[in-house]
Image (tube, rainbow over all chains, first blue to last red):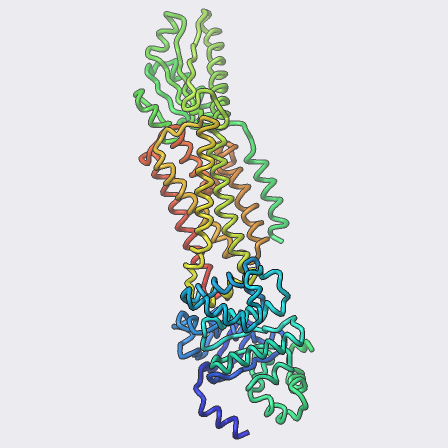
Length: 256
Length: 347
């Protein structure tokens, strides 16, 4: 679709990856990945379990070193300037990762402090985000007492609290009910609307439809990268699910 | 798997070999003021008994205090002047036995062994010479005249508690962050790994210090345990040991992924060897040689020597620089190992 290409050309690249390789011994987790992510877009990273999504996201966040390849995140080199990258990204992992024995407010205060926000900024942000989530009354509640769906939304808010340029979400909606997932995506849209680039991995194919562009990873390789609409057209599929199944069937380890 | 099958083997061997209260190869010093055929015979008998080995030959009274403060001599045997002559003319002569009673059981045992060897000799002498005579022994239990065992336990308990709180708690708390996934978030944040670790460690430093003070106060006021040496030095050495244990705890946490594993590691790999191999309960001299070497790398061994020396013998840094240096070395070693293991990039 020429339209999307036009958009692509106009847009500023915020993540630049060329020939990213990550090996664990003889196992190749990421096999020559190359892609660009543009500023402000929602970039979906799809794949079956073990396809290499998490490995890739960890490398982009500076949690893991690539074996080789050229990587640039938020304008900084992933080998040399990891500290600067860290200032500019937010990260939410598969595992729920707020402190369960602290209150909502304390979690915000702690993570705000970690990112060097001032006391005033922290208070403002906490109020803003808790209002958005309709949880202002619960600000003194211990996190443990909340249902999982709420916690995930909170974790997302904490991840974007310091207004990062990019937020990395590693399967943020695992184990969450469909309604909460929908609400979660509303939050993602809002963040994207505010100029935050969203890099999200998922294996829910309905979520792939919400992304502006998606890549599909199979066995550590990128097998497809385009807008959901283009991919459906290309593979003559009615839904992303079908696209995915068609690609995944070629996988070595057919876990499907 | 290694833990499941390795542990029992290690434990059984440790208990079997290390836990013996028999004495062999205890270091003694001899101060022979007469140096005649009888005193040489007695010395030979003592040294060939298997219980004692000669640590040092002294020639002046004022050296006695010094060798004890150095800490590796357990007992000093002193022959009075003109020993043989006195026995032959006056029918009696005296031997003074001074034992380091900062380890009361050991002192008692050593004294009894020495005593029985002397009795043997006396009997033999009596047979040869056919006249009644007597070797008088005079005993002094140095540093702990009443042979109170609390003197022995307090240093050991301080050591073990500090180790427990510092090493185990730190390792568990760091492993906990890993388990919960919060460690990942912290690593992605602009915080430096050093900041994360220092942040995790500070509460335990404070806790350990408070605990050390409580134990010292209790032992001082309730059990009347003396603090002969400088309190400042004692505190400084304690802080050094706390830092050592913390760096050990951090090291454990870098190799363990879960709280459970951190717990197992500190419990089995740390606590038991610390109790058994540090010389806290079971004298190191009695262990088989490989275990003796193993005990050389037990930080607690050195720390126990240090606090015993400071509290009971009033030793100062001049006597303890070697032990202190070893602790400093071990601390640096564990920190270096942790830094090597604990990378910003987790995999």
